[in-house]
Structures are given as structure tokens and as C-alpha cells.
Length: 249
Image 1 (cartoon, rainbow, N blue to C red):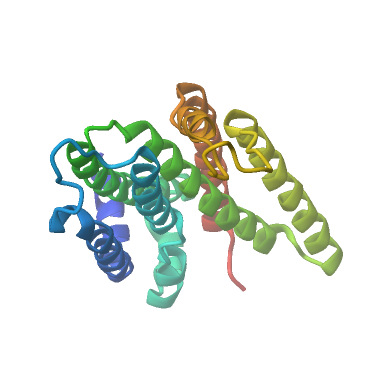
Image 2 (cartoon, one colour):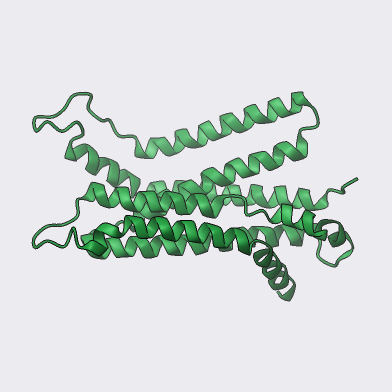
């Protein structure tokens, strides 16, 4: 346990600058989107914040938070720059243990930005009297999965592509893999929007919006995205394991 604690501490310390920059950007965006609530624009008697606006504000922050949490934290680059990569070959931690610590560091960032997104959603829930936690969770995890997929695909391409032909084959596999994931997710949130305005002149009816919001916050979609997230965590671990086993010339 002490070994993993030390490795996680090392990883967090090496990536603290990355975390601080992402945190500042996230907080600035959150404060910007909280301006309507702070100014009291939706605090009129008998008037509530429309559902579509809650979904928009919460969705934007959750999407950005997921992107920041899932993006490459630069730990591998920091290991190489600091000389830890070469020195680690003679240290007690095995490649498997180092890969596990890398995954745990990534999960720490995902949990951290997830809690920040949840806190932001709670503020809007209180202001609009609407529960948007399901929407936040699905959008946040979806963004995390999308960014992790890109990062993992890039890692596997670098590790296994020895020729241009290999690079092309792996690139095609990654492209179709991403398409399959997006298709599966799309089955849960597919909504038919009308091509013509309804009787009130609105291009998108309230029924279509409600249907979209319901599917976006559904438990089935959450389970689907979480299953994808677990698979990506396993692939991330395997990629880091292989990376730590490699010997630089």
C-alpha cells in the first residue's frame, strides 16, 4: 500500500502544473456560466429556469470537465524528462505496479473534476428546482471516454506501429472502433427532430426536447457509458504496462 501511495504522490506532484492550469480554466468557465444565477436573472417570482437552459449550462460544464479530466496529463513525458523512466528499471516497483499507479493518478483527476462538475450541477439544481445529475454524469463520463479513447489509440499506435503500413492498419481499427462506440451510444439518445416548425412556430417541439433530455439522463445510457469506461481503463492499464516494460535504446 505504501508503494502505491508513494507512486501516486509522485505522479500527482509531477503533473501538478497541468492540474492547476486545467483547474483555472474550469473555474473560469464555471463562473462565467454561473453569472445568470448570481445576477438573479432567474429569481423572479413564479418563474423557473427552462429545462433546455439547465441542460445547456450543465452540459457545457460537464463536457469541458470531462475533456480536462480525460486529457493526457503528461506523466509519461515528465517521467522521461526527469530521467525517472530509465532509473525506474532498477527500482523495486515492477512495470505492472507502475502502470497501476498511472491508472490511479488518472482516476484521481477524473474523480476530482467529476466532483467539481457535480458541485456546479448542484448549484443549478437548487436555482432551477430540477435534478440534472443524471445528465451531468452521462455527459461527463462520455467526454472522459472519448478523450481517453484518443489517448489510448495514440499510445497503441506509437507502441505497435513499426512501419507506415502498421500505422495505417492501427489507425483504421481505431477509427472504426470509435465509430462503433458512438453508434452504440447514439442508440440510447436517438431523437427524431421535426424538419418543419410546429404549430407554435418552434423548430424543435417541447416533446422532442423532453424526449432528448429523458434519454440523455437515462440509467441505461449511464450503464453503457460506464461499461465503456471500465473497458478503456483496462486498455489504459495495458498500454501503460507495455510502456513501462519497453527498454529505450
